[in-house]
Length: 118
Image (cartoon, rainbow, N blue to C red; front, side):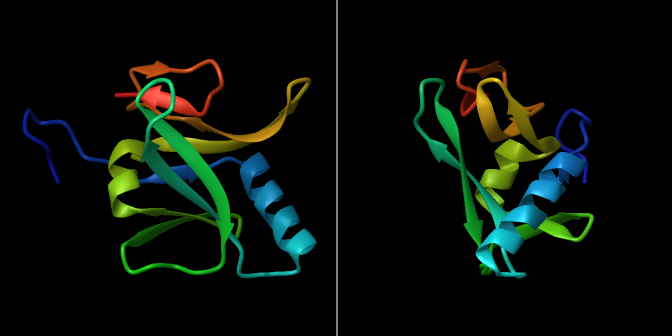
């Protein structure tokens, strides 16, 4: 569906292999094969919006799900408007291990990687 100005609206999220592997590992640790990574965008944070990551085993009426290698990430319609086209990754480095978002809609990101603005 084209947006005003001819730009295409992309209602999608992508998961990396590392993200899918970590979700699978969390399913094993929690002994719950229905677990999904829930990604939500909330107002606040140092840049205006912030990502919230959590585990969930329920899908709500307004949720959209995205899969990779049999694992799921779920988000709501409102959050998807700000996340569309993003890539969800799981990183392990000297600073720790964490889920991260490469969000093409963000015009600025906080140094913590959890906060962004559009």
